Length: 374
Image (cartoon, rainbow, N blue to C red; front, side, top):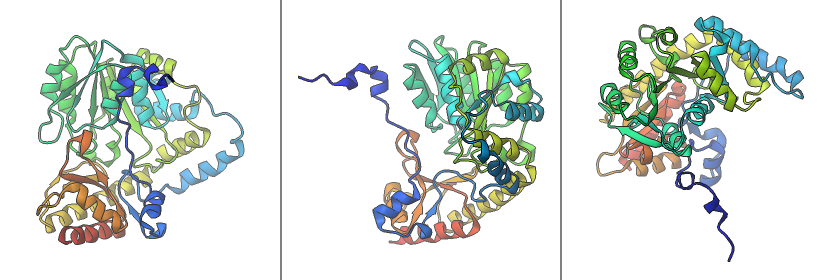
């Protein structure tokens, strides 16, 4: 009898339910026999504006060296980030998207006999990264769909806890904890607990809510801030993110990081994109308008939604005897891809919708109205 080689893997790895990304346009086109050009994808929180001209020029310039390995240290991007946030280059960890950086935290600081604290309705990567290291998950019930930081602080008293995950704004709910609330949380958490503040959607916050979280690093060496170029900067396809941390924490993360985890095109593009604040400002303004249009559209259809601080909105579509999976499938048939957030997210009556262009938002709302009536 042949041995089941799957049994060689630890039980906590075998029991993982893999992360499910948004459905690709090409896949839907094949399944439904649709023309790819007619499909609208609002499932993955991408920037509908694409990239700016400075970024495009940097990508084209970097193509000449594509046969060479990238700078494994990412010197130019780290230098630009250090200047932007007033930190030492030794405090920066680069990743293949911020997802990679989150995995590095888990790889370096979690393992069997340890635990991580996170909120109900949190980003799916937190429980996955925790489980993949054989660590225990401590799930704190959400408060108004967002992080209950008081309850999470109490949960970190568990002596096995070494990591606390906080997405701010949170995905998929779009909820946000103000800067002073996060700082109060940091003051309550034991120093042995690494607090990971995931700020992937920071650039979509109104200016008055964009607290200078980097300055907290000097007072809280157990803080790790993660950000990405996949959202407002429009570089989702190139995969580049980063962490700001105490040098000793960054050093440990860099020990488990693959030497060339960020490719040369991504490094060049991100360095140029970081300097294009006009592009980011326009992305913020257009996203805000699109978000308001989707909110208005949801209200017009009599649907509730979770007020969002990101580039997406989570709408309760389970009304009139219809379920969210049913509405999701009806939207697919109409060539509109959104994101189901049942299952691990625990939002079984909702769908998450990325803010697209004005035309894409209008297309979605029309398809949603038709799906609800059908």
